Amino acid sequence: MANLEEKLNKFALELFKIEVLKFGDFKMKVGINSPVYFDLRSIISHPKLLDTLADLLCEFSKDLKYDQLCGVPYTALPIATLMSTKIEKPMLVRRKEQKAYGTKKLIEGRFNEGERCLIVEDVVTSGSSILETVRDLRKEGLNVTEAIVVLDRQQGGAENLQEDGVQMHSLFTIKSLLKILLQHKCIDQATVDKVDVYIKNSQIRANGEMKNGVEKPKNRLHLSFTDRSKFARNAITKKLFELMESKETNLCVAVDVTDSTKLLDIAENIGPHICILKTHIDILSNFNVKLIQQLRAIAKKHNFLIFEDRKFADIGNTVKLQYTEGVYNIISWADIVTVHALPGPGIMEAIKQAIESSENGAERGVFVLAEMSSANNLITNAYSQEALRIADQYKDITCGIICQSKELVSNPGVIQLTPGVQLNNKSDDLGQQYNSPEAVIYEKGADIAIVGRAIITAENIKNTAEEYRKCLWAAYKKRLVAG
Image (cartoon, rainbow, N blue to C red):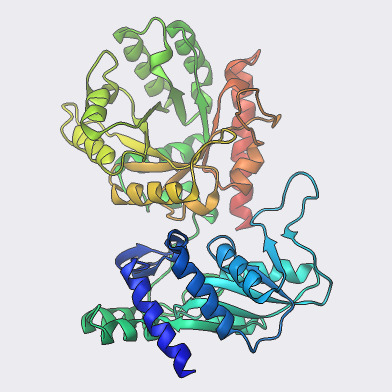
């Protein structure tokens, strides 16, 4: 054991060198902020350390009895894979979502009912991720009573797992890891004390509720738009929440047409049924300033916001000019614009500066694009998480996140928009994928659904918009009742 302890000390220092352990202010999955963050995802870029970690876990678990290994998706998957090859034990893969095609399996791999499966995980806070995996494995008849993890944050996870019949074994606890770093002067005593206080006041139950100390934010999916307006982080978001509730609509229509007269005609017809009208102003063949005046008048008449889906994605100075200058002068009329996080925080800083220096002082905001609905798009989970971090950094101008996953938006003061919605949920020949209104609102967690061609190409645009509004609002009300 002394030899293993020496190896763990050395490994802890290596993890610190590659910044797996970070100190600052971090939003956790369970919805609270932490002064310390353990991010093991980057270890895949250090193959020797990844191999060492697998060796340590194999040695640490050598006395455990099991027939199968299963890594909790996704960070633990490569770790479990290496362990499987080293100890020659078969491995199972649990999908986060069941396949909608082929065998439609949730658990991949060969196994027999009653076999013992050891769970592998990187870090445990409340233990909820492990419990999700445990329950799916148990549904398949597997015997799951033990889990091995790299780090126990000591916030109640071990106790929560024990209540469900799962014994957790960890290479490190947060306190033992900090002790090693303190002994080698990587951190100071003040940092250790700060984390100790945080752990004491942030014990979490398996369902995410706090046992004491810090109050966990409300689940946005179970709050009304009126209640969520109180959490809004800027005036334009608050205005949108209140508008949605008063009009009883969470419908955004994408009016992607090339003729100005047609744009105005559609806006007049769908205006009573929408909360947002989405434009691509640069595809109009006959754009003029008068058009903007008329569109703004219709928006005021029917009480909806205008959202220019510009998807800014350039360096800050260029974006600032694109937003405030040129023939479109977008800042003068678009309540909200979209932004890709690709260029980094500079793009948000540019838009913030433009809004703050705007002559008319109008309320303006940004939707940050974190995921796309097109098939085979190149956005990764790491990119989505970074987009969320940048959005949170600029909370004073961020209204919402455009994404496909309810897990990405936890703050009740932030709006989730999801595109790709049709009553007849098919796909087109250009890679656009569609979901039903209920699936998008109730299952994917969208607050606002973006509908395009299904409405603007309909024979009766006005009636079709009303039909979508009713379906989307009903799904939202169903979500509230379910909560």
